[in-house]
Length: 381
Image (tube, rainbow, N blue to C red; front, top):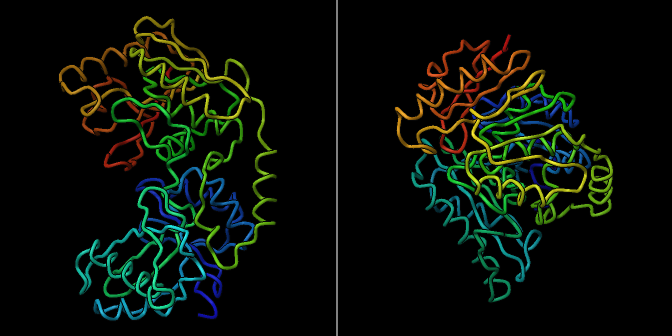
């Protein structure tokens, strides 16, 4: 194939979670994308090579950035197989490299997503076997090349996943606790809070520290993919190593020192505090996250602070009555001990909002990691 679709158009697609659309669009503009338009579960955008590498390396909001290779009408398994073989897969893979496929099928003659992915895999493997009698291996965990197959209403698109996997996996989470927050969700919450690193931030239910670590990366201007080992764009036939090295070096040199008392948190669980410290140690040495074991009821309170937190709920605590009582006590704590501060509270269960006993200034629905939750802002006077 002389030219792939992304090369002809310079158009790409970014996937994100429901409720993060405005944040994602603003981030794309900030990172240099142009002609941004809404699509299903994300945005189409235009970018040159340098801008594309920058977006993949820096995005905090998007979970995937896709480069389309081919778009075609697809009414049968045979036609999917035949069309997939029109791509010269040796331009993307060698026998020593691994690959994997994510697939999504809806309202089409091919009904099963996993089966559609299997057909694409067979087309790739058979092409190599015909040419070399050997085939590259599949590695679903850490593939060198991750492909995305999307079929909707019998229209198919085969794309390269430029991050090489979901971009919410930053690489700093070496330890965790039950039901950790997804990193892209935490980054979206921080963007919606408009916290800019000038005011102290505190998380009194910090868990394994996703909000704290994302705040640290944001305040320090650390690229979201700083710790990522593999990128899908390295397998593109027109990959430019010199441009990528320039992008990466420039971004890494633009990190800034973080003030000592800026980012703090606490949790009742000693394991959670231990996990935060372990995860923080994976990030660059440009500041600290101060975290301690404490019950929020024993904290002195906060003035002129941005409180960002995800209190225990359903999955994390279990007992509904216990959750309601805890939220009522936390609401009293905010009213009595946090005047002059602003709180942003994410509820994984929207029915719990009223249990806090405070009226939110606004509500913003956010869906991620199987949760259909809501973020609420509270001005504490």
